[in-house]
Length: 614
Image (cartoon, rainbow, N blue to C red; front, side, top):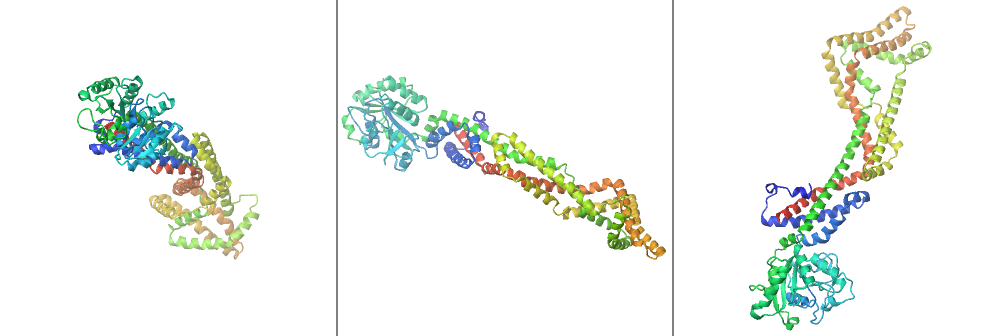
């Protein structure tokens, strides 16, 4: 959901929270968002293409967020009070009075400050020196007040010092003249106005109407900054009557809204006596006590309202794009799985020796005791006469109908299965390659990177071996299924069962009867040869009858086993081809799946709720 959509959330849909909790939503959300965004940045840096895709177009709002919003609006944010004014208005004098210490050089005859001076409380000194309070400046430790007058220093120089007078929620900033003729000071003035949350407008009876000075403070107020007018070098007569009139005129010209004004009488001794307070024009409040009592969170929200609105809108669109990319990437493995299943649907595994033996075993279990005994005798006889039968078929039946040996039949079947499997695997590789070529560049690049490392020939042989290496593997689950199915069919089809039993009995009894008859008539001569010729023919007869009359039942019987084999082939294709191709993509998905997007969205919503609540 974008920022603009969130603006239309009705009040009752928002999470209820007290004033304290609501005030904490924005800074906590900003701190959490910054931390998670940095972690996501580090994680994706190892994948340049993905990094560019995710963070494309985010440079502006991220820079604004990191350099302005985070330093000023996090849980540890503080008010930046900029002491500003025109040339020779006594800014540095007022700055030192607030600190009761000489931190910035003072000259009564000419402008002294060339570079801004930042003074923090003791606990924030390191933050100031490392650029976390005022990003964009090159910070140096202030060794003596005259450092601020060093004209040879670069334009972006910031002098930093600490004072025990300042609370952790407040930092003071002495600035160069806002109406300076020095071009280098113009840029600094703009930076100061952007960085300051509160701007102390140091005026004098000579400068309060200066157009450039008035415009500077008017723009500061229009941008949400709190402007606090101080009339310096004021005439104390008649209760500062002249200063009151001058301040009222300045407030009107700068379009301020009933600010609290302060006044400081003309006194050269203030340059050296820094024990004095700066009193309010009305009441007995001092400027420092007023600044220390300001609502940091409220002023921050007001100052950065436009900035926050832009950030929430831009970062909301960023999250939508990142979430959409993550969704598209998660769809790729699902697409590969669907394609594998589509190819495997045409695979028709055929039963080999083990499957035939299993079926024969289940049918034998339904025979009567007498038939089983004779069948065992026939099987023993046939095993002994198998070489004779094979010889007679080769020589006596040459040119006529020949029956392929079981070994030849299985070999032909396995050759067909092998070729079919190879073709399926090669077709899957071709589909992966084609799909990767047609994907969006970033995702396709990750897949192509994985495909390039696959040794196609080795994978093809490995899959074929896994599917056919142990002939037709039969699971225990399928054995149980076949036993139940044969038993169920046997009891549910009495008429067909009777015919099958009669045929089975005929095939079982016939070789034994014929063997006995031939043995009696010929005194045993020719009996083995006759049986060797008869039994294959009888087997063919039964096979043809079973094939034509009961084909539907046997196909149904084999379907679960075939589904097992298809499922196994799908797993082979996915494990040996799809997953290696998806290796890099999976690593990127792990970054997203670890929760950074969910955490960013949660923190973004906290920012949004805190913003709307302000």
